[in-house]
Length: 77
Image (cartoon, rainbow, N blue to C red; front, side, top):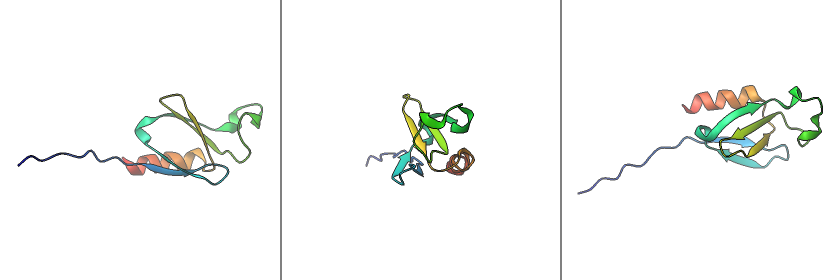
């Protein structure tokens, strides 16, 4: 009898500033950006509290602050 191993993947549920659910693999995150560090907040949609930069270069604006996103990442590891 053959056994197959399944890789467990912990995902993080976040919300966009328009309250849409996004599910992200924390292992594919490369950095978090606090949009307040930019001179103009017009770079991101209103209500953006954190920008999740993915390893493929995609940006995900979230309504959760970066501190909350960091906490969720730590909890999944």
